[in-house]
Length: 195
Image (cartoon, rainbow, N blue to C red; front, top):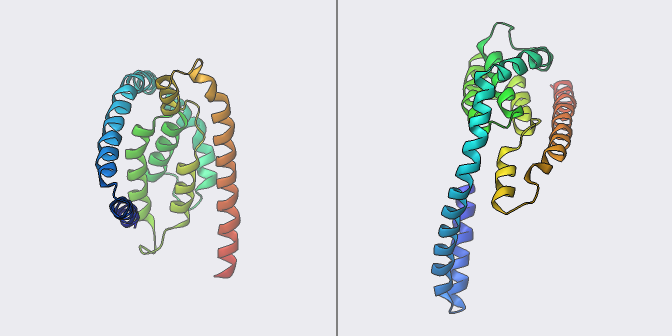
């Protein structure tokens, strides 16, 4: 669906430019956007490498595992349908721990693995289970302590204090996580009562 939307946007832009006699604008814009994309990517690589290196140290030093131990009791409350000895619970905890530390790249494999394991536990393979929906809501809105990507973008744009975003990010993501948990609980009760 998204690809179709992009295709419609591109074709409508090309057709509009052609009708207005400015077809050369399409080519100039395409090349300019491609150059800007490459430039931004290279500028971000340095900062992201630094943050990911530091966060890898946190993972190797046991900080991620310590956070996992803190998150485990909460995970057991949020996912009552998952057996305590299920590997899915471990993958969920590692995913959330990585997200909390801003390790988005490291969190993705854990998230995919957790979703596959949750599908194995799912009784109705054609419909997402409660645990899958809760995990998706938490993964999307997870509280973040170190917003590495935002910090790197602020560094790239010459911010005088690129890490000043940390406090507001923690508050915003905490609010998002609380809203996601509340919405999950309310909607689950609402739809469970209907069935």
